[in-house]
Image (cartoon, rainbow, N blue to C red; front, side, top):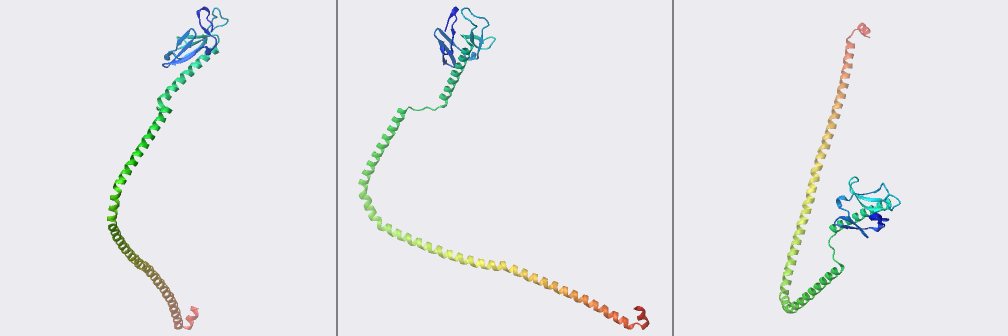
Length: 255
């Protein structure tokens, strides 16, 4: 960094530190402090037309805002250093926006120590409840065990009698169901036999009707043949009788 004629000029972009405060980049270095407002964050680089006193070549600069009305914020000896500063500012802004998104979408996470403490507290509570329940169950068992034994002995015979009655009733129900099932099976078989006979009867009647139709056709055909033969025979007889009635001359002419 050099400062001829009261102007701070940087040789490298690494000389400047970048920090984001309230969405605005803050540039700082030894003797240098600059806040780039968010509304003027359109950064471009350029090179001056003339050579300033104390320098060998025109200086490069970083411009914020519009090209016509923007403001020159930082000066460098080379334009590459100015371009590198703009890239660093853009990367810092992008990183800051990413961190804001993660903080908004990431749920609250407890620390490892807090999780361990919560787990230990849950385990201790569960163990205490188990011991308390076991003790209460033991006291209750010792108190009510003799009474339960006497009641069980008193009602054992009654329970056995009720079990026998229930078994007999169940057996009767099973027998009735079996008898009803057999009746249903027999009724079903009888129905199937009747249904088969009923279904076979139309077929038999149809076959008989077909046979009758065939016989009628055959008889009609035979009658027709006999009638034609009779007609031919009648014609021949008639012709013979006509010939016998003709005179010999007429017969000769007829021939």
